[in-house]
Image (tube, rainbow over all chains, first blue to last red; front, side, top):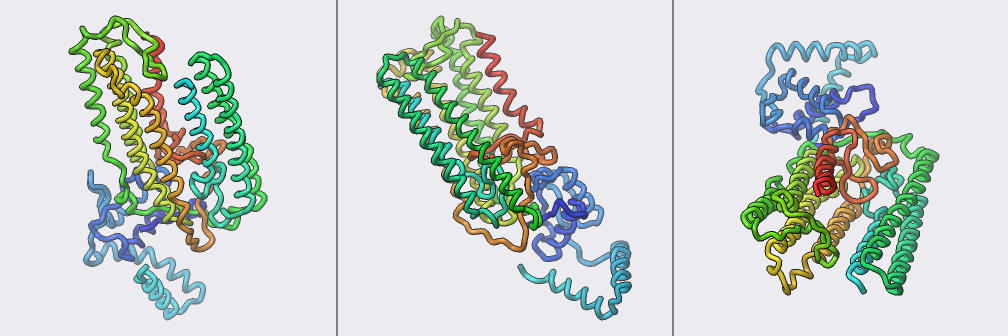
Length: 126
Length: 368
C-alpha cells in the first residue's frame, strides 16, 4: 500500500502516518496479521525521523490496532467486534465533529448522508 | 606503445564517456543537482543545458586524450612520467566537468526560482508499505565467501613463511612486476591479505548500510522510481560482490606469486590478471551504470493532481553533498553520477567508509 504524507501541513507527520495506516486497514489494503515495516526502514524510506514513525506505532498500539512484538515487529491485530471502552472513546472523538456539523446547520439526514458517503468511499476498491 | 599509456588512455576515455553521459543517467527528476517537478522536466532550457554540458565535456576530453597520446608517442618517456601525466589529465577532466556542473547547477536553480516551478504544487513524500519485500539485494553472508579465501591465504602464507623472499613486494607496476619492497617480518608477510580482509569487512558494512538505507520513491512516477531504486540496490550489491571477488583473486595471485615465484611463470595469467581486473571492473561498472541509468527513463509518468516530490534541495549542499539529520539512511542515491553517496549527517557513514581507509593508509605509511 502506498503511504503519502505532506510534511508542510499543520497535521503532524506521525498523525498522518497513523491515519493512513488505519485507513489502509479499513480499506483492506493491510490485513490483520500483516506486519508493518520496521521503524528504521519505514523512516528511511520516507526520509523522516525514526521518532516520528515510533510515535505513530505507539499511538496505534495504544489504540489497540497493532501489537508490537519483539523481533517480528508491528503486527495488525484482528478485531471481531468493538468493546465498550473503545466505543466510548470513538464516541467522544466523533462528538465534536458532529457538533461542529450541527453548528454549520447540517441536519440529521445531512450528517447520516455524510457518514454513508465516507463508508462508500472507504469500501471502494482501488 | 607502452602498457602504461594503454592503461592510462583507456581510463581517460572511460572517464570522458562517463562524465559526458552523466546528465542522461541520473535520477529523472534531478537536473544538475536541482529537483525539478515531473511536470516541467521537458522544459527546453533544461534539455539545452544538458546538451551543452555533454558536448563541451566530450570535446574537451577527447582533445586532451588525443594530445596525451600524441605527446606520449612522440617523446622518449619513462613509464612513471606517462602515468603521472595521465593521472593529471584524469583529475583535469573531473575538475572541468565539475566546474561545468556547478555552472549549470546555478543556472537551473535560478531558472526554477524565476519560473516558480514548485510554488503551486503540493509537496509530498511517498513510500510503499510492501517495498521491503520486493528488495532483491544479495544476502549479506555471501560477502563472507571471499573473506574465507583471504583467511585461507593468510594461513597458507604463515605455513609457508620460510619460502617467502627476504624482501616482500608491496607494490606492483602496470605490467604486474613488483617495484617496491619491504623487509620480511611475520607482519609484512600477511600485510597484503590483511588489508584485503579489512577491505572486505568494509564491503560487508557498505552492503548492510545500503540495505538499511531508504528506498526513496517518487510521488509523480512511483513505478519508474521503484524500478530504479530496486534495480540500483540489486545491481549495486552484485557489483560490490563482483568487485570483492575480483580484488580477492588479484591479491591472491600476487601473494601466491610472492610465495612461489615460479608458480605462474610463463602462463597467460601473468598478462591477464592485472589487465583483466581493470577491464572487468570497468565493464561491470559501465553495465551497472547503463542498466540503472536507463531504468527510470522508459516509463511515462502518471501525475495525479498538482503534487510533486518534496523539494530536498535544502539538504543537498551544492547539489552534491547530502546532510539530513532526520533521515536515518546511511547511503542515498547520488544526484550527479550513478550509485550512492553518504548522508554526511549520519556518523555511521563516516565510520564505515573512513575507518578502514585510515587504517590502510596508516599501515602503508608508517609501518613500512
